[in-house]
Image (cartoon, rainbow, N blue to C red; front, top):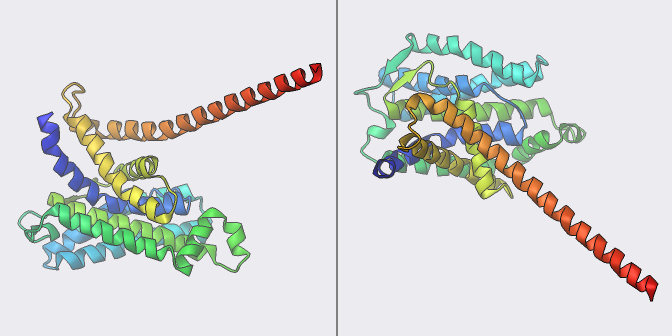
Length: 310
């Protein structure tokens, strides 16, 4: 129990770092209804760009902004493959993810770039939790504002009903490309911050990030709901934090006896539970409503029989 309590601050820090990833996945998964697997590659792209620039003497803040640009570029290519190349959305993401594996190696030059001893955003003396929390809140609020603009509304409408919004003269291809680019830009920021926090960038650290992002979004929605954009983005942020808390508790639990190598299995189980619980709740609610209606119909039938007898 003590080990779990000691690990919670670190889990919250991780969750805030991955809040950007969660927000990015939310845009493609919920807003655009687009299964984008580019995430596994663009996460590493963000870390690779930031690490290389920092080791070459650039500011960590500028390096993080450049990582955002690199993620946006990767997302734009995925969008082009899907909208202009007419390639299936899932396949477009897979193709870009595969291509990014080699591109990221080209960026870094080696499979792993160390940032030990280099200045990073987190070496300023300010608490990493505070920096990540402020950054996540600012980005969350900016996304909320964006989705209230005409451009943001057209993006939301494209995900809801592309055919209808096209009838109003909106170019849905451009909307999809914008959404996918913005999503992967946010994912790349998460990768850049994760590399600076961990002290290294590795070409394989993006594997499985899409599952973590989906788990965060689904868990957040199960807790906070999705009544408005404000609550939906808040759910994505807190979903990431809650995911890492659950993961840490599972990993540190003595009776479960799990190891760090079990991370993917834990993630899969968390996603399964997060998906099954809402479905089970809906089924129970529908069953309850059906029983209530049956009881009401039975009561009405009984009243009719009594009325007829009189």
